[in-house]
Image 1 (cartoon, rainbow, N blue to C red):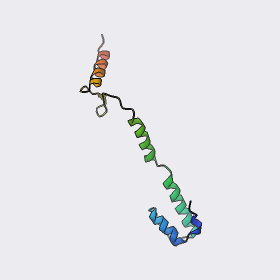
Image 2: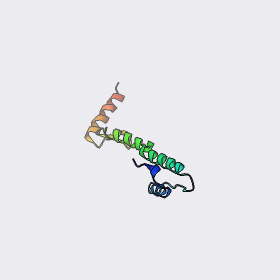
Image 3: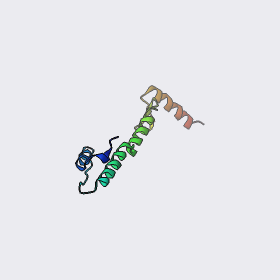
Image 4: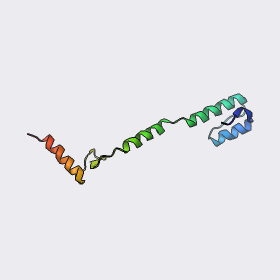
Length: 95
């Protein structure tokens, strides 16, 4: 990684702007380096949104043929869904 302590305040400010961070050059150089390092480390950590997207991708792989996900029931227009629906209907109405 880049040694930020060797850079000038102007260079630190330029790197910060490239990353979308506005640094105040009136602060001491150590404070600027600290702020920039914190921002760069936070950029590398996965966010909660990234983790949720991974979970969604995992569950999306488990698709049941014939299941209507929009209505949360068997799709009776699909051959497999029609058979599963009839099976579930028969179980519910056993005498």
